[in-house]
Image (cartoon, rainbow, N blue to C red):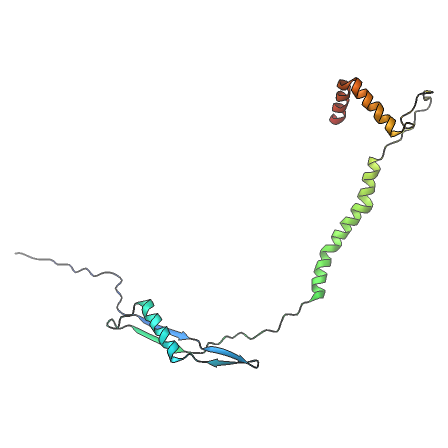
Length: 173
């Protein structure tokens, strides 16, 4: 016995028909503070229909439907009055940050700066009791600054190695 088997394969996702409904809002005109609604013209609706037909691949034989309605949309949004700027609130929020900043600046100027300057000032020490300063020898405090600079330059020229060792010791401290 002979038998024949046939399979019919249909493509998946076949579109049987397309139905599209579009709601189109009209235009609004403001006159004397009042907004009035004006529906779209038939010519506009016809343009929208043609545009939609091209976009969906309209096929009348397939049974496709396109419905376009002209309906006023409710905005539901009322115009709000312009926002009032609360300068007091803004000022208070600025002051909230400026007060701590001012305290820090005053603390630096009147407390920390004098302490740092006092620490930088040269310390004058008293000589221990019973020690007599050498006579005729000029003291460092008695010499003007220019003489000290000249003496230092002369010492560096005479013995640069010793001067560099002294600088290294100072930097190490």
